[in-house]
Length: 415
Image (cartoon, rainbow, N blue to C red; front, side):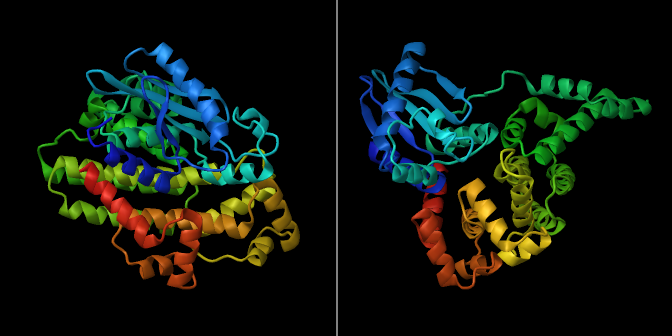
């Protein structure tokens, strides 16, 4: 690993506290050198992860990586890392779940083994649930920010081929372009890329957005005059506007969309270079996409339409307070039946679900703003700061102050 192994271990521990993604790394003899993951069912996971590492080493003798998507419910990322001339470690990120585990899913996970009911409960709260695209983004951020490694490009197609494919599939868009003979080739490329940008935000494709902003050709099209800060700010403002509209089109409420747009538009005022401006747009676009994704993330085809409608109403109203009786009245159903149905299908009470959403939003505010703890608790409609502290500690094992300090330390180390 790096020269300071203790520092790496501390960073991995901090990473798990924030992201809940297990990290395992093995020495050259495939003995486990360290893991940041520890629960009552760790042995079940270890017996599953170690063969992954062994098979990976056989397939990649020196250095390489592999995104393991062989199981539709579980994802892993495996990679090797050279720490010196004769020292190579094998690391595994995961497991990460694609769905909340249910009794029908547990046997398919590969590490279910002889788990007791309590171990299943612990694991279901210890492992993150995310989409493949979000996991790709998480892997990229982990390698770049925690391990200081250049992340791989998972999609083999270049962005220009993606743009060409999308535009050829979108007949109405192509027809619109052909109506105006004055549209030159550069303008056509810009329009198609902007359209793709909006589609990614509307669909919540966070990793594709990350890839877009790390593609040199795409950025040359989006920001043709990088030498002029003023020109870059104008383009950035246009892209932020497109992002706000796309987010609203995905079903997010106009007030939250405008609030995020205003926050990042304000940041543009003090930006001094193209690099700063493009990072502002990238961060804003990914936040919009993540918010759009939440609507799809928490709903599920296996849930009844009533449960999905309930989830959508809760997300739309966040952070406003909404009681069970209010939800039931809006959905024209009895509160008792709604509560029982929601609990049965999601494995969580409506109250816990709303608390999880507000705690996740609090994490973003603690990491990305300088709002006080009282301001955050008030903004997210907790009854008091002490109650906010209590719920946050219950959900994350950290106080808001500890969480913010760790986030700041991590940011300082990455810089």
